Length: 102
Image (cartoon, helix red, strand yellow):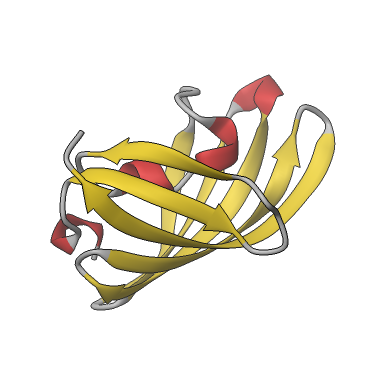
């Protein structure tokens, strides 16, 4: 499912937060571990459907997470992620939209 996303700069808006971030997406896999950034994490695909993927990942001492990404179009996805980062739990729902080139 992630291979069908458009490469480029994506704007990520987490619901309930004023701030948003930008992320250069090349493969779509960059959207899986937003809270753990470029950490070297192992991943396991739990569900892979044409418009939805769920991935669990573990980053050793940095924490772990479970992310579901639902594709609305090649330039718009909904993200639900939860896990542990730095010893603290996190949970968020976000919308990510392609806004241009990297």
